[in-house]
Length: 135
Image (cartoon, rainbow, N blue to C red):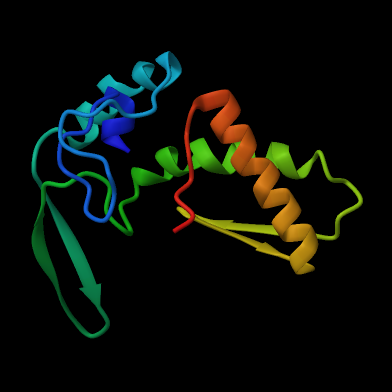
């Protein structure tokens, strides 16, 4: 996500053709959020993993947005809002959208879910230059 904000790959991406220094899909709108993400994630921090009945374990966090990171919710909205607006284009489909933090789930007939998802994927690519890896 940070590389997309910056518009340049900071590392080689395993199992892809993307190498460090390659251009990444980005838009000027993404770059407006770069100072916010740099402030939130620019320095290593400590993350705690909680366990029932015992003390939490702290570990270093230097790689950006992690699972369970409360401030990652804003970043997740960058996909949830376009998904909701895409679903509004299919009012006759009986598909339910569930979202919790950074997870999105569509429940319905496979044909209808797939039609909405493929339309969503095209919208992201056409409007933001973002491609969803389907491999």
